[in-house]
Amino acid sequence: MEADSVRSVRLQNGSDGAVSKEELDRHGIIGLVWSDFLIQGFPAYGFNSREDLHREFTTVTTQISKPRSKQMKIGVSGASGKMGQAIVRELNSRSEDNEIIAISRTPDRSTSGVETRYGDYDQPNSLVQAYAGVDRLVLIPTSDMRPGKRSDQTVTAITAAVSAGVNHVVIVSGAGARNVVEPDVGAAYWASENYLIRNAPRWTILRMNYYAESLAQEAIMAAQHGALTGFAENRVAFVARDDIAAAAAGILLGEGHAGATYTATGTKAYTGAERAALIAGITGQSLGFLVVLPEAFRLGLEQAGIPIDFVNVLTSIQHHFAAGGMDIVTGDVERLSGRPPMALRDALVAALR
Ligand SMILES: NC(=O)c1ccc[n+]([C@@H]2O[C@H](COP(=O)([O-])OP(=O)(O)OC[C@H]3O[C@@H](n4cnc5c(N)ncnc54)[C@H](OP(=O)(O)O)[C@@H]3O)[C@@H](O)[C@H]2O)c1
Image (cartoon, rainbow, N blue to C red):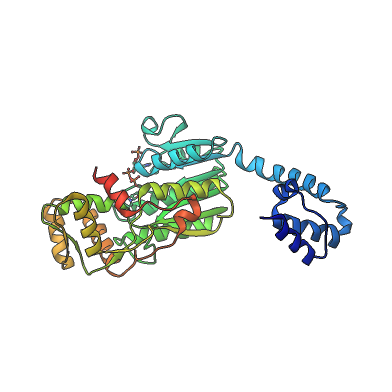
């Protein structure tokens, strides 16, 4: 900002005089306008000069920011899984000042360089101990698809967090969380979200759209018969797992997220035909998109020996795709993590490598 334009703003505010470069750097233009506002409008506060104000603001911001960024204990529950490890990595890379605690049933498998604790979602006492002293905690659900299991586990973990005195609980939930019944995949997410809202002192919900990595897995399977499948042409804004992790780290390290629900998505929703073409461009093998009946889809999974609970969940996800439930682009990944989400192509290339 040029000194002349600053001076013109100050003149509009009834002030005059030269503006030094040093002063500009220190307050910025908005600070200068508000400095004059405070000095002239609120004499009772005793700010006689900008130097007074500068000293006061420096002290106040130091007092506010230091305790917030230092010595917070941040727990990651479910830390040994792929998402958990990614969140721990993000927390480590974004903040050296906080203590990260990786909690899982297999502490040895968690990311090294952080404190690890044993915690089993099926053993409430282990969780109360694991969450002791933690200020902020993120709960990553398991992939246990037995009906009711995931919501029971998350409810157990939220109860344990509250009794351990955790101040702020963040849950990783899913796009499609809504008031439906099992085996719809949205049912467990909905039950967990509602329990969290009713019970945690401070909470944040991070819903994830469909993983780009899961699309890559589907592409590997689809290569055998040359087509991705769906119950109708649909659009999905796939998101890389690392981007969900970065968004979670942004919530845990940041301020102003209590009471918020976010949805981590990619930057663009792809139709079935578009994603098939994108994958074909990467692999060099032809791939299309085929609309199939839900019954045929289920039968194919069952014949491939996939356990019935997974068949049910995968079918419910396809119904959700077809209904447009993942055709959402939010911008939340960038808002929370400070960086744009990976392009789907890059995420697929990394996952198919
Ligand atoms: N949105 C999507 O497209 C999408 C795609 C794939 C997965 N997901 C979901 O995303 C979440 C994270 O997935 P991920 O990729 O990190 O899965 P993952 O790598 O399979 O990790 C799941 C972790 O759950 C832990 N776990 C299992 N039972 C547990 C228990 N009783 N108590 C404590 N921990 C337990 C396991 O750790 P230990 O055995 O070490 O305890 C495992 O490391 C899961 O809910 C998964 O279903 C979503």
